[in-house]
Amino acid sequence: MSGNPGSMRDLIAHIAQALADKPEEVQVREVEGEQTSVIELKVAKGDLGKVIGKQGRTARAMRIILSAASTKLRKRALLEIIE
Image (cartoon, rainbow, N blue to C red; front, side, top):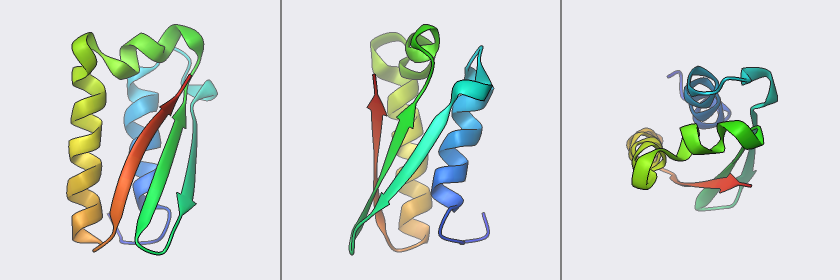
């Protein structure tokens, strides 16, 4: 990661596209606040289960990766999966 402003958004997009059957329908939006960024992830209805995973494990793993990346950039980031 280069540390550019879109890098956390790009990271989540890359992971979601790798998991999705319809990677072209993956949409990632970053809403930046002063202290916190919210990364909004939207995928095709059929890919929602793949992105969330059994008992939310995949989503939790993505949040952990995002947390580690945002710590490196000294900014807090939250992942919201939009249905």
